[in-house]
Image (cartoon, rainbow, N blue to C red; front, side):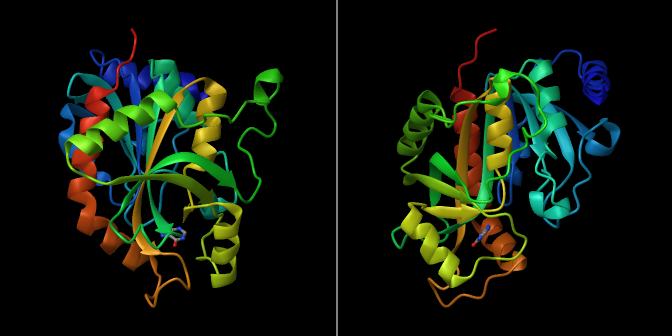
Length: 270
Ligand code: HPA
């Protein structure tokens, strides 16, 4: 069981840190690691079962430490479905963090906006998602727990904490539905119009598989998107990964300040 080995490694390397909140950093959110006090950082390559992450702009490091009074495990870099076609690339890391004591998963990503009132550099709290590929990282799991409810997948109490933090900082925090696109190609304008009609507010290539895995494990989930562009065909801009990263970087400082404030306010028992 690679999970047990990685748990063992982390307990040995950071014996005094018992993380309660797991964080996954997507494009634009990387500066959060600067808010981790006395971090112990371990490359994924030293953690059994952790993914090789090869996308520009996504690291491959787990940092344990504290943000405010909250003990955290921060993952810089995630495995995306478009890298290999597999959707369970984050299964082992999330199970390791659960075994270490995490009961909350905070996810972040960069996304394309489907709403004209939510331009690039806007923030959106996920209220729900649409699993457009209809793929699940739980395929092959045994037991009745695999039939996990996805109602309130994004925890109402944690969303309230996020809203309060944004309000205190005078930041507009939109709330809406995230559509998962398998990628790696961007969407066609027709697909974007379809997503709008289906009730999605933003589109991105991550987050949903991890939310499913986390709910299966019993973790509460909070997720935040940072808009880097309007969806294909909604503006004249040319979409590319470089454009996404540049836009994400431009607002990354504000994003990580907000995220650090939210994480510092999350209450976890134990
Ligand atoms: N589509 C999909 N994923 C994205 C986008 C987009 O427009 N922008 C950032 N991630």
